[in-house]
Length: 376
Ligand code: GLU
Image (cartoon, rainbow, N blue to C red):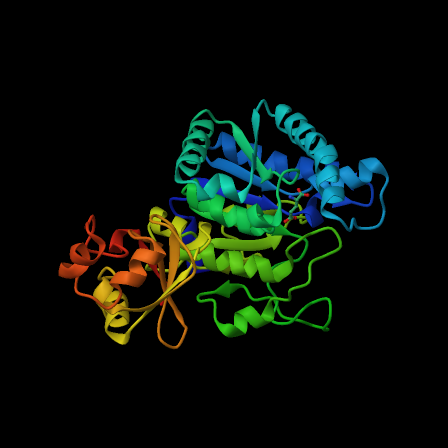
Protein backbone atom coordinates (compact mmCIF):
# COMPACT_ATOMS: atom_id res chain seq x y z
CA UNK A 1 0.00 0.00 0.00
CA UNK A 2 1.56 3.30 -1.02
CA UNK A 3 1.39 6.52 0.96
CA UNK A 4 -0.38 8.24 -1.92
CA UNK A 5 -3.12 5.62 -1.93
CA UNK A 6 -3.62 5.88 1.80
CA UNK A 7 -3.76 9.64 1.77
CA UNK A 8 -6.22 9.92 -1.12
CA UNK A 9 -8.56 7.34 0.41
CA UNK A 10 -8.81 9.28 3.63
CA UNK A 11 -12.14 11.07 3.71
CA UNK A 12 -13.39 9.54 0.45
CA UNK A 13 -17.16 9.31 0.55
CA UNK A 14 -18.55 10.29 -2.85
CA UNK A 15 -17.24 8.18 -5.70
CA UNK A 16 -17.92 8.31 -9.39
CA UNK A 17 -17.44 4.96 -11.11
CA UNK A 18 -17.24 5.08 -14.89
CA UNK A 19 -17.78 1.74 -16.57
CA UNK A 20 -16.78 1.41 -20.22
CA UNK A 21 -18.47 -0.66 -22.92
CA UNK A 22 -15.39 -2.91 -23.11
CA UNK A 23 -16.01 -3.94 -19.48
CA UNK A 24 -19.76 -4.36 -19.70
CA UNK A 25 -20.07 -6.27 -22.90
CA UNK A 26 -18.96 -9.75 -23.82
CA UNK A 27 -19.54 -11.77 -26.99
CA UNK A 28 -23.24 -11.96 -26.36
CA UNK A 29 -24.09 -8.37 -25.50
CA UNK A 30 -24.16 -7.23 -21.88
CA UNK A 31 -22.03 -9.39 -19.63
CA UNK A 32 -24.38 -10.04 -16.75
CA UNK A 33 -21.69 -11.67 -14.60
CA UNK A 34 -19.36 -8.69 -14.76
CA UNK A 35 -22.21 -6.25 -14.11
CA UNK A 36 -23.38 -8.46 -11.24
CA UNK A 37 -19.91 -8.45 -9.61
CA UNK A 38 -19.50 -4.70 -9.90
CA UNK A 39 -22.99 -4.09 -8.56
CA UNK A 40 -22.30 -6.43 -5.61
CA UNK A 41 -19.21 -4.42 -4.71
CA UNK A 42 -20.88 -1.03 -5.14
CA UNK A 43 -23.79 -2.23 -3.00
CA UNK A 44 -21.48 -3.49 -0.28
CA UNK A 45 -19.68 -0.15 -0.07
CA UNK A 46 -22.95 1.82 -0.31
CA UNK A 47 -24.12 0.00 2.80
CA UNK A 48 -20.93 1.11 4.53
CA UNK A 49 -21.88 4.74 3.86
CA UNK A 50 -20.07 5.44 0.59
CA UNK A 51 -22.12 7.27 -2.04
CA UNK A 52 -21.82 6.23 -5.68
CA UNK A 53 -22.72 7.72 -9.03
CA UNK A 54 -22.20 5.52 -12.08
CA UNK A 55 -21.47 6.72 -15.59
CA UNK A 56 -22.18 3.71 -17.73
CA UNK A 57 -21.65 3.09 -21.41
CA UNK A 58 -23.08 0.02 -23.07
CA UNK A 59 -26.31 1.31 -24.62
CA UNK A 60 -25.10 1.12 -28.21
CA UNK A 61 -23.31 -2.20 -27.71
CA UNK A 62 -26.37 -3.71 -26.04
CA UNK A 63 -28.71 -2.36 -28.74
CA UNK A 64 -26.49 -3.75 -31.50
CA UNK A 65 -26.54 -7.14 -29.90
CA UNK A 66 -30.30 -7.06 -29.48
CA UNK A 67 -30.69 -6.22 -33.17
CA UNK A 68 -28.22 -8.94 -34.19
CA UNK A 69 -25.66 -6.53 -35.72
CA UNK A 70 -22.11 -7.84 -35.74
CA UNK A 71 -20.21 -5.08 -37.58
CA UNK A 72 -19.74 -1.69 -35.97
CA UNK A 73 -22.37 0.79 -37.07
CA UNK A 74 -21.31 3.50 -39.48
CA UNK A 75 -23.91 6.25 -39.45
CA UNK A 76 -24.96 8.45 -36.55
CA UNK A 77 -28.70 7.63 -36.89
CA UNK A 78 -27.82 3.91 -36.71
CA UNK A 79 -25.82 4.41 -33.50
CA UNK A 80 -28.58 6.59 -32.06
CA UNK A 81 -31.19 3.98 -32.91
CA UNK A 82 -29.05 1.23 -31.36
CA UNK A 83 -28.67 3.32 -28.19
CA UNK A 84 -32.45 3.75 -28.06
CA UNK A 85 -32.85 -0.04 -28.23
CA UNK A 86 -30.07 -0.74 -25.73
CA UNK A 87 -30.45 1.95 -23.05
CA UNK A 88 -33.64 0.46 -21.60
CA UNK A 89 -32.09 -2.97 -21.40
CA UNK A 90 -28.94 -1.57 -19.80
CA UNK A 91 -31.03 0.09 -17.09
CA UNK A 92 -33.11 -3.01 -16.54
CA UNK A 93 -29.96 -5.07 -15.95
CA UNK A 94 -28.64 -2.52 -13.43
CA UNK A 95 -32.00 -2.11 -11.76
CA UNK A 96 -32.38 -5.89 -11.30
CA UNK A 97 -28.83 -6.30 -10.05
CA UNK A 98 -29.10 -3.47 -7.49
CA UNK A 99 -32.61 -4.63 -6.63
CA UNK A 100 -31.10 -7.86 -5.27
CA UNK A 101 -29.36 -5.64 -2.69
CA UNK A 102 -32.53 -3.61 -2.13
CA UNK A 103 -30.97 -0.57 -3.69
CA UNK A 104 -32.83 1.76 -6.03
CA UNK A 105 -31.36 3.12 -9.27
CA UNK A 106 -32.15 6.30 -11.23
CA UNK A 107 -31.48 6.96 -14.90
CA UNK A 108 -30.00 10.29 -16.00
CA UNK A 109 -29.43 10.92 -19.71
CA UNK A 110 -27.57 14.08 -20.63
CA UNK A 111 -26.16 15.99 -23.57
CA UNK A 112 -23.55 18.71 -23.47
CA UNK A 113 -26.19 21.39 -24.03
CA UNK A 114 -27.80 20.37 -20.72
CA UNK A 115 -24.62 21.33 -18.91
CA UNK A 116 -23.52 24.44 -20.81
CA UNK A 117 -26.70 26.15 -19.63
CA UNK A 118 -25.91 27.30 -16.07
CA UNK A 119 -29.49 26.76 -14.84
CA UNK A 120 -29.71 23.21 -16.19
CA UNK A 121 -26.21 22.54 -14.84
CA UNK A 122 -27.35 23.59 -11.37
CA UNK A 123 -30.55 21.52 -11.68
CA UNK A 124 -28.47 18.47 -12.57
CA UNK A 125 -26.26 19.15 -9.55
CA UNK A 126 -29.25 19.46 -7.20
CA UNK A 127 -30.95 16.33 -8.53
CA UNK A 128 -27.75 14.31 -8.15
CA UNK A 129 -27.23 15.45 -4.58
CA UNK A 130 -30.84 14.64 -3.70
CA UNK A 131 -30.57 11.15 -5.21
CA UNK A 132 -27.35 10.55 -3.26
CA UNK A 133 -28.98 11.78 -0.05
CA UNK A 134 -31.77 9.26 -0.65
CA UNK A 135 -29.22 6.49 -1.09
CA UNK A 136 -30.32 5.97 -4.70
CA UNK A 137 -27.65 5.01 -7.25
CA UNK A 138 -27.76 7.44 -10.21
CA UNK A 139 -26.72 5.83 -13.50
CA UNK A 140 -25.74 8.36 -16.11
CA UNK A 141 -25.18 7.99 -19.83
CA UNK A 142 -25.03 10.35 -22.74
CA UNK A 143 -28.44 10.87 -24.32
CA UNK A 144 -27.13 9.34 -27.52
CA UNK A 145 -30.45 9.40 -29.36
CA UNK A 146 -30.59 13.19 -29.46
CA UNK A 147 -26.88 14.06 -29.47
CA UNK A 148 -25.42 15.67 -32.54
CA UNK A 149 -21.76 16.69 -32.87
CA UNK A 150 -22.35 20.19 -31.55
CA UNK A 151 -23.89 18.90 -28.30
CA UNK A 152 -21.99 15.64 -27.84
CA UNK A 153 -19.69 14.95 -24.93
CA UNK A 154 -17.60 12.95 -27.37
CA UNK A 155 -17.31 9.96 -25.11
CA UNK A 156 -18.21 8.89 -21.63
CA UNK A 157 -14.71 9.56 -20.26
CA UNK A 158 -15.40 13.23 -20.83
CA UNK A 159 -18.94 13.01 -19.46
CA UNK A 160 -17.62 11.26 -16.33
CA UNK A 161 -15.00 13.99 -15.82
CA UNK A 162 -17.67 16.68 -15.91
CA UNK A 163 -20.05 14.72 -13.68
CA UNK A 164 -17.34 14.13 -11.06
CA UNK A 165 -17.04 17.87 -10.76
CA UNK A 166 -20.81 18.41 -10.58
CA UNK A 167 -21.33 15.81 -7.84
CA UNK A 168 -18.20 17.05 -6.03
CA UNK A 169 -16.78 13.53 -6.04
CA UNK A 170 -13.82 12.65 -3.82
CA UNK A 171 -12.62 10.03 -6.29
CA UNK A 172 -13.24 8.99 -9.89
CA UNK A 173 -12.64 5.36 -10.77
CA UNK A 174 -12.52 4.73 -14.51
CA UNK A 175 -13.05 1.03 -15.12
CA UNK A 176 -11.79 -0.12 -18.47
CA UNK A 177 -10.62 -3.29 -20.17
CA UNK A 178 -6.89 -2.85 -19.45
CA UNK A 179 -4.98 -2.80 -16.15
CA UNK A 180 -4.33 0.95 -16.35
CA UNK A 181 -1.98 3.25 -18.24
CA UNK A 182 1.14 1.62 -19.68
CA UNK A 183 4.34 3.32 -20.78
CA UNK A 184 3.70 1.96 -24.29
CA UNK A 185 0.58 0.73 -26.08
CA UNK A 186 0.09 -2.84 -24.74
CA UNK A 187 -1.65 -3.87 -27.94
CA UNK A 188 1.34 -2.97 -30.06
CA UNK A 189 4.40 -3.68 -27.90
CA UNK A 190 5.63 -6.57 -25.83
CA UNK A 191 6.30 -6.19 -22.11
CA UNK A 192 4.92 -2.73 -21.58
CA UNK A 193 5.17 -1.46 -17.99
CA UNK A 194 2.15 -0.34 -16.03
CA UNK A 195 2.50 3.19 -14.64
CA UNK A 196 1.17 2.95 -11.07
CA UNK A 197 1.29 6.65 -10.21
CA UNK A 198 1.03 9.86 -12.23
CA UNK A 199 1.83 13.01 -10.27
CA UNK A 200 1.60 15.32 -13.26
CA UNK A 201 0.25 14.88 -16.78
CA UNK A 202 3.41 15.56 -18.77
CA UNK A 203 3.95 15.29 -22.53
CA UNK A 204 5.46 11.86 -21.87
CA UNK A 205 2.29 10.65 -20.15
CA UNK A 206 0.19 11.99 -23.00
CA UNK A 207 2.40 10.12 -25.44
CA UNK A 208 2.02 6.88 -23.51
CA UNK A 209 -1.75 7.02 -24.02
CA UNK A 210 -2.69 5.52 -27.35
CA UNK A 211 -5.63 7.07 -29.11
CA UNK A 212 -7.13 3.82 -30.29
CA UNK A 213 -10.21 2.46 -28.61
CA UNK A 214 -11.18 -1.20 -28.33
CA UNK A 215 -13.80 -2.65 -30.65
CA UNK A 216 -16.77 -1.57 -28.56
CA UNK A 217 -15.42 1.41 -26.59
CA UNK A 218 -15.34 4.97 -27.89
CA UNK A 219 -12.50 6.83 -26.28
CA UNK A 220 -9.42 4.64 -25.86
CA UNK A 221 -6.62 5.52 -23.43
CA UNK A 222 -6.11 8.98 -24.89
CA UNK A 223 -9.53 10.20 -23.86
CA UNK A 224 -9.01 8.66 -20.40
CA UNK A 225 -5.85 10.67 -19.93
CA UNK A 226 -7.46 13.88 -21.25
CA UNK A 227 -10.27 13.25 -18.76
CA UNK A 228 -7.66 12.71 -16.03
CA UNK A 229 -6.38 16.23 -16.73
CA UNK A 230 -9.83 17.70 -16.20
CA UNK A 231 -10.58 15.67 -13.09
CA UNK A 232 -7.29 16.31 -11.34
CA UNK A 233 -7.60 20.03 -12.21
CA UNK A 234 -10.68 20.14 -10.04
CA UNK A 235 -8.82 18.53 -7.14
CA UNK A 236 -10.25 15.03 -7.56
CA UNK A 237 -7.99 11.94 -7.65
CA UNK A 238 -8.50 9.64 -10.62
CA UNK A 239 -7.82 5.93 -11.01
CA UNK A 240 -7.85 3.93 -14.23
CA UNK A 241 -8.24 0.23 -13.48
CA UNK A 242 -9.32 -3.11 -14.91
CA UNK A 243 -13.09 -3.43 -14.58
CA UNK A 244 -13.07 -7.14 -15.41
CA UNK A 245 -10.85 -8.03 -12.48
CA UNK A 246 -12.88 -9.62 -9.69
CA UNK A 247 -12.92 -7.53 -6.52
CA UNK A 248 -11.45 -4.47 -8.27
CA UNK A 249 -13.42 -1.88 -6.29
CA UNK A 250 -12.56 -3.53 -2.99
CA UNK A 251 -8.91 -3.58 -4.01
CA UNK A 252 -8.95 0.11 -4.87
CA UNK A 253 -10.92 1.19 -1.82
CA UNK A 254 -8.74 -0.77 0.56
CA UNK A 255 -5.66 0.98 -0.87
CA UNK A 256 -4.13 -1.92 -2.78
CA UNK A 257 -1.77 -0.98 -5.62
CA UNK A 258 -3.84 -1.61 -8.69
CA UNK A 259 -4.30 0.39 -11.88
CA UNK A 260 -2.93 3.88 -12.41
CA UNK A 261 -3.55 6.61 -9.85
CA UNK A 262 -3.46 10.25 -11.03
CA UNK A 263 -2.93 12.58 -8.11
CA UNK A 264 -5.13 15.69 -7.88
CA UNK A 265 -3.54 19.05 -8.59
CA UNK A 266 -2.79 20.98 -5.40
CA UNK A 267 -4.05 24.24 -6.80
CA UNK A 268 -7.38 23.41 -8.33
CA UNK A 269 -10.22 25.28 -9.92
CA UNK A 270 -13.39 26.10 -8.01
CA UNK A 271 -16.58 24.55 -9.43
CA UNK A 272 -17.73 27.63 -11.38
CA UNK A 273 -14.31 28.19 -12.95
CA UNK A 274 -14.11 24.51 -13.79
CA UNK A 275 -17.46 24.81 -15.54
CA UNK A 276 -16.14 27.75 -17.55
CA UNK A 277 -12.86 26.01 -18.38
CA UNK A 278 -14.07 22.57 -19.30
CA UNK A 279 -17.81 22.53 -19.91
CA UNK A 280 -18.37 25.63 -22.00
CA UNK A 281 -17.36 25.92 -25.64
CA UNK A 282 -15.49 29.08 -26.48
CA UNK A 283 -17.33 31.46 -28.85
CA UNK A 284 -14.37 33.59 -29.90
CA UNK A 285 -10.95 34.93 -29.03
CA UNK A 286 -9.55 38.07 -27.49
CA UNK A 287 -5.89 38.71 -28.17
CA UNK A 288 -4.20 40.48 -25.24
CA UNK A 289 -0.84 42.26 -24.88
CA UNK A 290 2.04 41.24 -22.59
CA UNK A 291 0.97 43.66 -19.85
CA UNK A 292 -2.52 42.15 -19.64
CA UNK A 293 -1.07 38.63 -19.82
CA UNK A 294 1.18 39.38 -16.85
CA UNK A 295 -1.69 40.98 -14.89
CA UNK A 296 -3.90 37.92 -15.47
CA UNK A 297 -1.35 35.15 -15.01
CA UNK A 298 0.84 36.58 -12.25
CA UNK A 299 -1.29 39.13 -10.44
CA UNK A 300 -4.74 37.56 -10.39
CA UNK A 301 -6.33 40.55 -12.17
CA UNK A 302 -9.38 40.90 -14.42
CA UNK A 303 -9.17 41.70 -18.14
CA UNK A 304 -9.62 45.41 -18.92
CA UNK A 305 -10.10 47.03 -22.36
CA UNK A 306 -6.64 48.63 -22.29
CA UNK A 307 -4.83 45.29 -22.65
CA UNK A 308 -6.82 44.12 -25.68
CA UNK A 309 -5.13 44.08 -29.07
CA UNK A 310 -7.70 42.29 -31.25
CA UNK A 311 -11.05 40.49 -31.18
CA UNK A 312 -11.85 37.38 -33.21
CA UNK A 313 -15.30 35.90 -33.78
CA UNK A 314 -18.81 37.12 -33.21
CA UNK A 315 -20.02 36.75 -29.62
CA UNK A 316 -22.45 38.27 -27.18
CA UNK A 317 -22.30 39.49 -23.61
CA UNK A 318 -22.12 36.48 -21.25
CA UNK A 319 -20.50 34.19 -23.83
CA UNK A 320 -17.38 32.14 -23.01
CA UNK A 321 -14.34 33.50 -24.86
CA UNK A 322 -10.67 32.46 -24.91
CA UNK A 323 -7.91 34.98 -24.19
CA UNK A 324 -4.79 34.41 -26.27
CA UNK A 325 -1.46 36.20 -26.09
CA UNK A 326 0.26 37.78 -29.07
CA UNK A 327 1.88 34.43 -29.93
CA UNK A 328 -1.56 32.86 -30.16
CA UNK A 329 -1.14 30.83 -26.96
CA UNK A 330 -4.28 30.35 -24.89
CA UNK A 331 -4.00 32.10 -21.50
CA UNK A 332 -7.48 32.00 -20.01
CA UNK A 333 -11.15 31.49 -20.71
CA UNK A 334 -13.92 33.60 -19.27
CA UNK A 335 -17.39 35.06 -19.62
CA UNK A 336 -17.37 38.45 -21.33
CA UNK A 337 -19.25 41.50 -20.08
CA UNK A 338 -19.37 43.04 -23.55
CA UNK A 339 -20.15 41.79 -27.09
CA UNK A 340 -17.41 41.33 -29.68
CA UNK A 341 -18.49 44.47 -31.57
CA UNK A 342 -18.41 46.61 -28.40
CA UNK A 343 -15.00 45.18 -27.41
CA UNK A 344 -13.71 45.99 -30.85
CA UNK A 345 -14.70 49.64 -30.29
CA UNK A 346 -13.15 49.97 -26.81
CA UNK A 347 -10.06 47.78 -27.23
CA UNK A 348 -6.84 49.50 -26.13
CA UNK A 349 -8.74 52.23 -24.25
CA UNK A 350 -8.73 53.16 -20.56
CA UNK A 351 -11.87 52.10 -18.65
CA UNK A 352 -12.71 55.77 -18.09
CA UNK A 353 -13.40 56.07 -21.82
CA UNK A 354 -15.86 53.16 -22.15
CA UNK A 355 -18.93 55.30 -21.52
CA UNK A 356 -17.78 57.99 -23.90
CA UNK A 357 -17.37 55.51 -26.75
CA UNK A 358 -20.29 53.16 -26.11
CA UNK A 359 -22.68 55.70 -24.60
CA UNK A 360 -23.06 53.53 -21.48
CA UNK A 361 -20.86 51.60 -19.05
CA UNK A 362 -22.13 48.58 -17.06
CA UNK A 363 -18.73 47.14 -16.18
CA UNK A 364 -15.09 48.22 -15.95
CA UNK A 365 -13.86 44.73 -16.80
CA UNK A 366 -14.20 42.92 -20.10
CA UNK A 367 -13.86 39.64 -18.17
CA UNK A 368 -14.10 39.75 -14.40
CA UNK A 369 -11.60 37.62 -12.51
CA UNK A 370 -14.41 35.67 -10.81
CA UNK A 371 -15.65 34.54 -14.22
CA UNK A 372 -12.24 33.59 -15.59
CA UNK A 373 -10.29 30.31 -15.55
CA UNK A 374 -6.59 30.83 -16.18
CA UNK A 375 -4.94 28.01 -18.09
CA UNK A 376 -1.25 28.85 -17.64
N1 GLU B 1 -22.91 6.41 -24.74
C1 GLU B 1 -22.40 5.29 -25.43
C2 GLU B 1 -23.17 4.04 -25.06
O1 GLU B 1 -23.77 3.96 -24.03
C3 GLU B 1 -20.94 4.97 -25.13
C4 GLU B 1 -19.99 6.13 -25.17
C5 GLU B 1 -18.58 5.66 -24.73
O2 GLU B 1 -18.31 4.45 -24.68
O3 GLU B 1 -17.77 6.52 -24.40
O4 GLU B 1 -23.19 3.08 -25.78
